Length: 612
Image 1 (cartoon, rainbow, N blue to C red):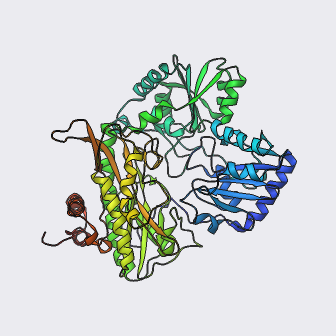
Image 2 (image 1 turned 180 degrees about the horizontal axis):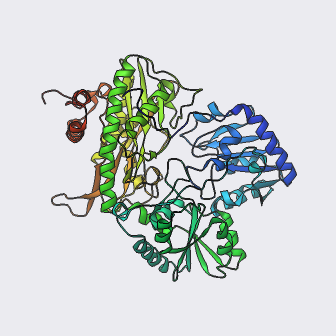
């Protein structure tokens, strides 16, 4: 890779300054006094409850400096707290001004429990009904009731009222996802959606999740970084013509023509009136992404808000043959880029000159060089030494560090291609790893292999499989505080439900679902380890089986770092699986690699036990 190669930058490395935390919290408190509320809730959310939100909806980051993808701040007149899950317990205190905002791990206390204790009797807690689901509002109502306080929606978000220079809402171009890649026409999808709607007793469905909107209408956009979404809503009646409400007005004539064959198209601003105009019908609102404001609009018009699952979510989770073929092709393309990067990283790190930002940029260049990259699927996690212990670490120019000999380097990254979405994590040794590092890496790898090799009867949930990834760590008194796997979309979100492999994974796994397989271990202040591949649920034929069985096909193609593997901890079956996987990586990728990189891959994928 030469310095003359053009660079394609999809992520930046600036960090919201927490030095402005006191000033911004003070401004919010002034707005609270003007609005006559004693507290205000600031979730990391937009009107669609999305994980990745447009810049103008990054209220939590602007207010607190915290850049994680999940979290909630509560600001009262005399206290403020930020509630984060296990992924961010190390990151949050590093990013916020802890003299003004107290980070609180959700494992210790929820925002609702904190509010029940902190609110004074008679206090009024404000919230934006567009940023909370009906269930979320109900939880807040129960919390304030315990405190003898009350809950009040605000007409204008109080953070927006004090956010000087707030970015404008996006309105990117809308494009069509070709049917050859989608695998099914949008008209057929809408027919399936209506069929599911008929069984629910509802008169219409509100599509509030932009991912579901994209899937149902075979459209994509650029309103959100890292996920190709066109923001908007749709109304799909049980009978009659659908209506599509898009933020963007940038729709090419051929795209508009195709969409008008499916639905009436209107601007996003017309959606609230259209929803109110439905009258006294029974309207399905998605429990996960439908804002409380939508429920209020339906009920104000005399309708019944039927809050439950959007049927599209389950349909979208099961990939068809075209989407599966696209995923396999995307992973071969991505595997070539990641392997080239790992070979480059090996040489660069050995020279003691590797920086975290430099690694992010290099990996992006290797992916872009293939000519098919549309975006990274999330900001690359590039953590050296202690930064690797921060589960969702995001390098900034202020935190960028060079990896030192004797450290581990963790790189978790992914890409968006028109035919598939990828997500892969590799942990590599720089210099000689310690015996502890090898032990921990191998225990994580054993859990990763256990998931990869698992076979299970139809009807199994992700929660039933999750323990397989943890058993070897548990034997040493260790664990990790995140799920083992999340669902993945098809040129859509890298984090797609409802399926997941986690203690809370209650959804039954079905053939065609794609998930991640990513156990980890994190020693705070020292290093982090995570190994991740994407896997496809598929039918498994077992001679003499008494019931239908499923298993996983591994899609990701990239070598593990053999220098971190403690072979004595592996069983013969685990060694055989790793060798077979490495053999597939080598056979699939080598012909398309330059000779020097192919030679590196041959060494990296050599049998763990030579001659066996």
